[in-house]
Image (cartoon, rainbow, N blue to C red):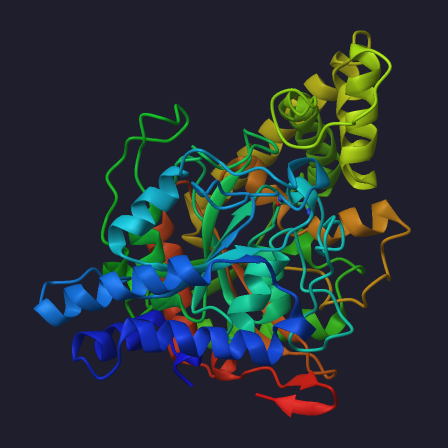
Length: 493
Ligand code: GLN
């Protein structure tokens, strides 16, 4: 099947005219017909648009034009990224019928490359969650075991790449929403340095943390997708004007001389022992290839979750104030007066978790509590960042588990938000510090579920992160394994 290949392999075939972009898009939609009713990764399919885009790419290839690396490549987009003329729900009832009048900067860049957009993917409402169970529309199932969650909040984007119903996808990561679902679905997922990618057109959750990034089947594709989306943007004042190298130059199969730090604070009793084993084996592989692996300490790690669950909800409470029934989407139809219209619209339009975050955030910012919670959290954030600054004086890259557990059962943590929040314990520290981080497949637990290795770099040191990730991948086989999706008891691989 064409849809199971990587973007770089497909580019060669497109370039040599062995295949057409239309045939490739059709192969993806055929795969969608086969497994999507079980995986449920998509909220919207854009087949007409995709075939039109594929046609255009084919015309370019036929003329013999020098085509960009992603021309004709089928891609899925998390439904939190604005797509002009294509419904963008953020997984929320409140935006059920919202059709953006403009494209996010990343979309403009991808369209310039000539990508083929397959559809918009399911997600936790407004990217709040770690399992994609907080979507107002559907639950996405992990292709490796349909009874388990795909991770979140970009669970749809991770699941469709894993299930081969897209070649690659975009997600967003505020506290781990790219890295954690990538780990749980056995694919590559990367959060670039905060500021590397424009947030213009990314519906805001927590603006000081949000970053867009790729999901791919291998590290080479990750570099290609980064090439397409990085760069400063006049429409996002937090995007940073630093040179963007060609990331494929970082795909060097050699870690000799690189120092890799393994922070002891990540190996707590809460870490699944099978995952700890996988990570240990992964760092041993890197050591065997000539890297120096040493234990390091990031002493304020334990405060990352508490800090995150003050700062992210505080920013969310401000960002989500705009959904008032006047400017966007859903509105209650029979309010008694204006205030009552706001109340009813927001009560009916937002789900449980979003309401919880708005309340937490409003409380943390309220007069009398702001110093005790919000200001204190900002100070803790600085301490967490200083830990990383000190560590990167000594090491090039930090290696940790991406998630403390493999994918858990659907429904297992929905009743206990705190339990759900603990899924983010390994990913939120790097988010606070704005660091680049990748998750790459590094093994499987006995039950057959994938494990992810998280590699973190200093700000703007994506090159080193990609180099270590690439070397690990080139010397291991984990990324080659595909899930066997159980469709009505029939295995569909
Ligand atoms: N799981 C985290 C949360 O619920 C992170 C989400 C994200 O990165 N968007 O906030």
